[in-house]
Length: 269
Image 1 (cartoon, rainbow, N blue to C red):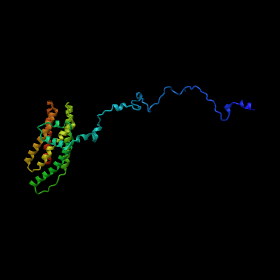
Image 2: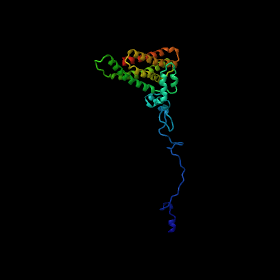
Image 3: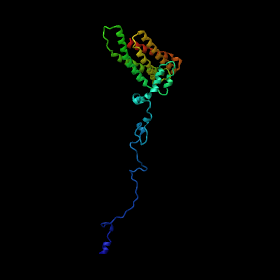
Image 4: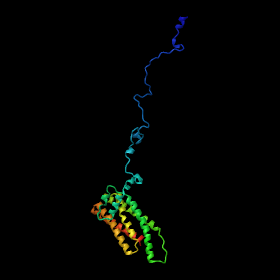
């Protein structure tokens, strides 16, 4: 009986462990030799332009994007460098605008042209001629006619803002495009800086134009306008340094004198 049990196959007994048969593993037909991991999504730039990008790759469109775009024009942070001036620098440039004969204003602002003078000098001039113009008309009214009442003319402020801001922004911009068209070197920021500081003498003149004597008023405005026009023209000539565009310098002088006469005729008549 013991011999009969010993002849049974042991592989079918409970708890027995079948022998491990080592078989040679053959590659499956679905496996590709030499396969590696791909980064999703793939870069099929040949068929889809820039297509998807692999890790660490750069897009051709980003490389071809121009750095000179119009986004900086509408960004306030791009103009902060032009307001980085201290009191000593501003005072030095204000004094230079009162001495037009030197003609070296561009050499002084070459390292750091500012828009501080453009903004604050033109704004001060707007309120100065609007308020002092009303004072001048009041004094003239009190001197000539006592029968009618005098009223403050609020429209002076609107006219002053439109004329001064429009002049100091548009005229330098027009000269910038004109000189670029003529093939001359031009800088819009430097032109705005020049015309901005050229208005400083009109602020001083407006206080003297309150005096109710017409002859004295014309003398003051012509002297102030001549100094301002000479400051613009002489510095513009030294900056351009080309004889064939002398008409540009003359026209700048005439426009500056025209602004002086406009201030006298409209606000201090």
